[in-house]
Structures are given as structure tokens and as C-alpha cells.
Image 1 (cartoon, helix red, strand yellow):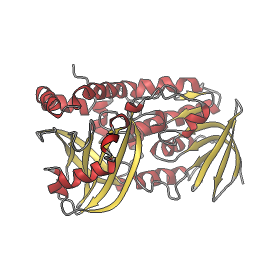
Image 2 (cartoon, one colour; image 1 turned 60 degrees about the horizontal axis):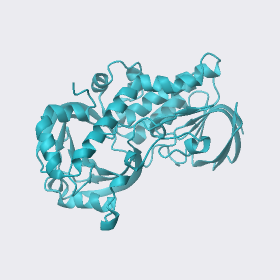
Image 3 (tube, one colour; image 1 turned 90 degrees about the vertical axis):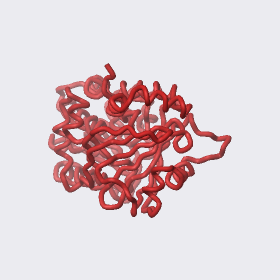
Image 4 (cartoon, one colour; image 1 turned 90 degrees about the horizontal axis):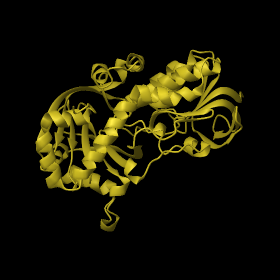
Length: 387
């Protein structure tokens, strides 16, 4: 069994899978390690992304949009939406045009991996990285799994293991995060819903998602992703209300959402921690780089993380390939990442922090939303400049 690789990718979500794909054509020995038995399952994600044209408007100077959308075949698209509808705490509606795609994320990740494995790449599923010893020019990685158990020697390690990243912890990479920079998101996939197929709905209000928001994302037919996110610093421990209870309360009691979901049945439930503090302080150190959620690449104000994770995977894959060939230094990774998506991530965090000032009071947030209007809500949720 092969135990020496140029690159080890830990975690095979969209970020890790994309990294592997862009490494796979470079005649480089790559190992991808995934803890799940089946890549992509279960899905812990709203699965909503902008269309390619919408993302180009959000990232007009991007060099990677065409590349990442070439990895999204039509067969992994569950639904296409045209509108976003945001509700204030008093349920005033702010609706604007926005073309989006609802993915079958499990199929997306599986498709990318299938294409990757056609090349010089190994994949171990049902496998855990138990420890890492950094030896400077290489790392000794203890892997335990059904296909292989033992020590792997890797020249470069890619942390694509989500947030909080164990890879980042083991290599001593700092996040710079506090409790306000992490959200706990819970979601149910519901069937039997009565929703508009082409509208993504977002709901605010402290009775349902304190200083956060809930969502209904139509997957097509009568199925939808329904969830909410609350930052760790906003848990009302004294009230003993869990995030799951908030979600159930939203589904059953919200004056608008409950009517859409009154006959719904739950297909599955998932939960995860989501980084909403922007790019972490250190995305690279020595021979390790972070991609996707591990690097904090989620738009804090709307929770979008798939396109940014894929962009980071593309950057990492291409850069690492050149580094292995002796053409580029890994030190440029952080700057390339910031040049590509740093501005939109930073703006999103700024909007989140400004919203924090007002969202503690439903009346105040209603008032602010009335002032900014549909145009302002649209710009904030699309992370556009207000000026």
C-alpha cells in the first residue's frame, strides 16, 4: 500500500474535492482522506449558490468563476430560483431578483471526486487523520480507516476538514475568531411543503432566530431545506432554549412559514458550526494550506460558502502543483486568496457587525430595514458596496 505522497488533502467536501481535481492533472501523487463512508453524505448545507452570471456580478474581477462552474454539471442541480424574499421581524417583505441554483451537493462532490479519481489520485473513505507530526519539509500523518491504517508521509497537507479545523489546530494556525464569529446552524429537509419553487425565503426576528435568520430553500417538487443559524454568543442559556427548539418553533409557529410547512414531514436533520468571521488569520504555514470552511470562507451575512470554497480549492490546487514543480512558493497562497475573495468576505463581515447593532431589538431592526428599503437589503445580502 502506497504511503508517500506529494500532497495529502484532509476532507473531501467541495473545497477538498476541488483541490484534488485541480491537482489531479499535474502528475503529482495525491491522497484524499475523508471520514464519511460515502463522499457527500449526509449533506449539511442549504445547497444554494448564485448562478454563474450572478456570481460574476458579485465578483467582477474573478479569474476562477468559469473554472469552478465547469465542475457543476446540470445533473447535480436540483432547482433554479429567480427571487430572494427577506422578511423583517414584523414580516414586511423585501423581495428582489437574484438568479440562483439549488444543488444536490452530495452528487456534486461525488461527481468531482469521480472525475478526479480518473487521474493519479488516491481516496481513502471511512478514514480519520488521528495525528500529525510536522517535520519541516514533510509531515508524518497517522491515518486510521477501513482501507488503510498507518503513517503516511506527505510533502504538503491541505486542511479541508471544515470548521473548526483540526489540521489548523495541529499546525498552530490561528483563526482570530471569537464566539460572535461562529454560528450554529441546524437544518431539516422537509417534504410536503407548499412553497414557491423559484423563491428563496429568509426570515428574521428574535423569537425565531435571535440575531440570526431562518431560511426556506426550495429543492424542487414539494421538498425544501429549512433551517436557521444563531451565533454562539447569542445563545440564551438562562432560557434553556436550544437551537433545535428555535427551529421547531419557527416551523410550527411562524405566521408565514408555518402555513408553508404545516403538512411537511422531516426527511433528515443536520447541524454544523459555520465560520462567519471572514478569512481566518492564518490560511498557510510552512507546508500546510487551508481551504473552504477551514479557512473561514463563508459570506457572514448570508451563509454562502460553496463558491468560495471551490475558488479556494482551485487556487490551492493550481498553486500547489506549481510549488511541487519548483515554480512558486506556497507563501503567496494567502495573498492570492485575499485578492480573489478577500474584499467580498470582508464586506460581508462588516455588514454582519453593523446588523448586530440593530438586530437585538426587533422594533429597531424593522425601522432600519424600512430606511434601507429593498435596494439596501438586496445590496447587503449580495455583499455589494452600498456606495
